[in-house]
Length: 312
Image 1 (tube, helix red, strand yellow):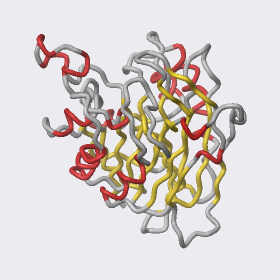
Image 2: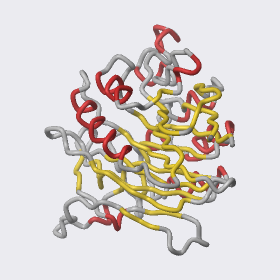
Image 3: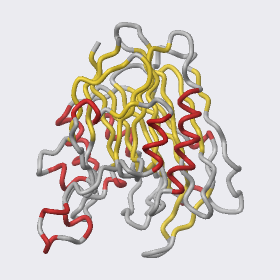
């Protein structure tokens, strides 16, 4: 059976023109019509809040809105942090708990298993309602039966990062794990390498009876030569780009995203930071960067990576 999977850093729905729009993100996703999409840099605000310094003030449940606009029935959101932008350059963060996750899973599966690892409890001396939630999400055409999460050990004083795994049942009754993650951004990759080691253990823990494959998606903040990527390959994870032998640059989506307008388009798609890895009985027919050169280049500072996979 063929399944189309995508991974997309949506940059809090802030475009390269600095405009906020869930509609544009939904249009990009709908344009390629994936069956499952993993999103990074996602926000859920329950009151008007500016969650990150690059974001804008809103009170949207972004994964729920995008899933509804795209027509993907099931979604899961798990935050890495609660955050509030206090100035142009300063943020205040809080830890999250399992109660901060949100989901729309199969309503017919009332026994769907939820296993959301918790961090430290929220600081009850602070009104958490004024903090937005920032994390990762999985949107799916097919039922989500089970959810697991992993919070990486913090690297020095860097922002908390996480991963989630969703057990998805395909129409042919086969079950696959889809893992979504967003690794840190250490400039020489030490943070990413530490997190990749934990991610490999998390992925290997998902194998079991009845599971035919694990699909790992995300923004790894690592070009192919970083030890993070090399280490994941040594652990047996297969990069879908090995099928196409193409570079697959995803960042920046537009030269304006890094202030390079005057230099021209030579910096566009300079780096490959977003990946889809495979483990188990799953192969890749084709992988590509979805780039319509119009909406996609404006909707976020990243472009989505898409792959058509066949489940054996």
